Amino acid sequence: MNANVPFCENEAAVIEAVRRGAWEEDLRAHAAGCSACADAALAARVLREMQAGAIAEARVPAAGWMWWRMQLRAKREAAERATQPITLIEQLTYACIALSAIGVVVWNWRAILGWFGSLGAASHWANLSIQGFFVSVWEKTGVLSLFCAGALILLCSLAAYFIFAEE
Image (cartoon, rainbow, N blue to C red):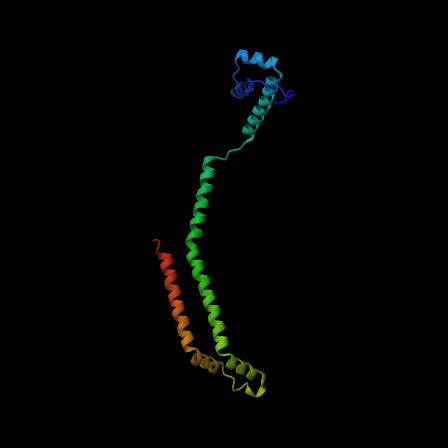
């Protein structure tokens, strides 16, 4: 041990006495005469005062307010958990719609190009038939349309299951 650093075996007892706030007379007399114990007592006293100040400044919210906040948080989390299946089905539905639209466009690319080409010709304005375009799309994509309708029914059934499964 370094000879320059004072050490006393009563330091722990002095610190504990300061922490408790109860001094024994012989320990107080020893701390008054021992420089190591006097320093330890001073440091312990400063720390105790800092702790008391921090406790006095601490603002603990009212229990009723904290309970209300926790109830609000629990309701928000429950609502979030309840809407997760609905959100998932919504996203799947949007993906199916987008894929179906892409499929229809790819499947009927030539018919779409022909229809847009007829828009540019002035002589074809009278013969332009949007109904004819959709009939040709149905003839070419009837199976695809039935598949999409089946997928929609399946997704609706799955959504209903997730909604009513917890009840």
